[in-house]
Image (cartoon, rainbow, N blue to C red):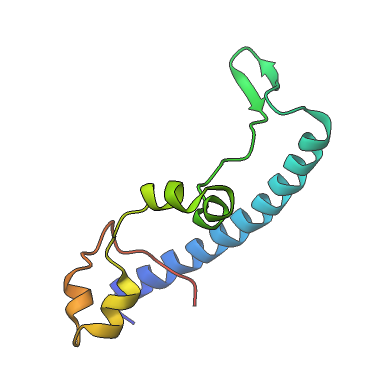
Length: 114
């Protein structure tokens, strides 16, 4: 095994260990958050020292077109609609790797667990 391969194995081992620990800590944090949500009302905060602590915030809102369709008149709904390209239709109608050519990579390569 070359030194580069050995170093890659060592780094992969450390990475897997760190990810395992992160998953355990994430589970603990999720449980603690659930307990805090039972105790702290939305909009309130708990400071351990000034500027350090937690705040309970309301859930985020996301526009839902189906709900809009139910609540609005046909005219109102049509007024808020616009045509947008559809990747689903592009994959169905365009040849070969055309959709890939219209989908530039963003970000950096990532490491995933096998």
